[in-house]
Image (cartoon, rainbow, N blue to C red; front, top):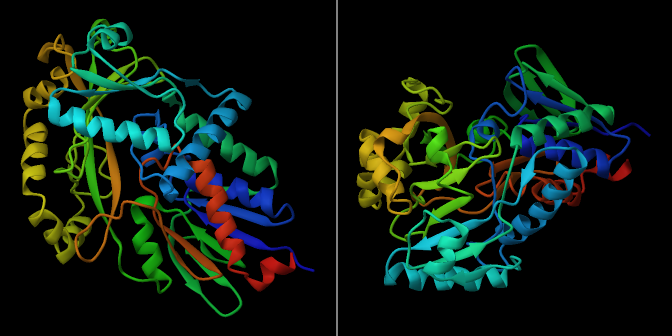
Amino acid sequence: MSHTTAAVIGGGIIGLAVARELHHALPDADITVFEKEAGVATQQTGHNSGVVHAGLYYEPGSLKARLCRRGVELLAEYADRHDVRYEACGKLVVAQNQGELERLHAIHARAVANGVPDVRMIGPAEIKEIEPHARGIAALHSPHTAIVDYPGIARALASDVEAAGGQVKLGHEVKAVHERSAEAVVVTEHGEERFDLVITCAGLQSDRLARSSGDASAPAIVPFFGDYFLLRRETAELVKGLIYPVPDPRYPFLGVHLTRRIDGTVVLGPNAFLSLAREGYQRGTISLPDLREAVGSLAFWRFAARNIPAAFRESKSVLSTRSFVEQARTYVPEISLADVRRGPRGIRAQAMHADGSLADDFVITGTSRVLHIRNAPSPGATSSLAIAEHIVREALNRKNPQIAES
């Protein structure tokens, strides 16, 4: 009986978690991770805010809600076991007016239904006790919402994969995946390799890799950048944990919030605006092929047409640092323009359906031999270990004959 050979494409936190879970499910399998960069977690995993979401917002019973709650438990245990920095700093979702307060009560009900521990509504006095410099008429307090070193988690996962006998091939960009009757072929600049099973976790390139193996063109990835500003060290003491706005259903993205990161810095942001390059983490980066693909899409223009108010709001924060800071001052009025400096930029791989609607939940497509993770939205990093369980179970349930024999 031959060993199963499996490949995972993508060395971010989800791809590495999938590779580790494959080893758990198939201890005798030969598993290879392909990552085009020189290190793991260099793309979205290494450019997010580091928040471990508790599951406040998601529809009770939905896959996203279930994977988030399971993911939090697994992530906290994993971080502790591998000595990766993890801190339950707590989160306030702060209402500024009656309309926001009504929406906040609905979020509270969802959080309770999702099993978020110790979550509760509080008034202005308790807001001041938890975040002395924050302002609002009420807030939802989630004391166990946490921050973590996600790149550290990814490095630990890579070490686990290698310790179990797997390979993490850095500097191996996958150009295409071709499915054949008895195998799947992974094409890189170094040549071709054949596997019994391939799972793509390619983030910003997920749609392109899916199309290369004959999968559907939609959902397509449209990249949105998010800029962050850093508070100077003295002002950072104004924020103890996480201070978030109440989501506004008129906008597809959350808006500026305040986040203490695991290294002690505090960031404001992110905003969200169409990126001129899928991997444009450096400001000024332009990829004409990426830009042509995004703006040449009818789906993008359908999305844009129904989100003009959102585009106006986000463009103000892109063009004006003052406008960006004013959004943060809504929650912590003591912050001033002089207190901030430009910080990092993240890129959101937003999957978009052909009708211009955003894919808000996980999208998994493919066959019994090639499985594509087309969308793993926030809280993707939080849920990564639970997502890996779900994906590997899905792959094995598709009853690939060679997997079944192993």
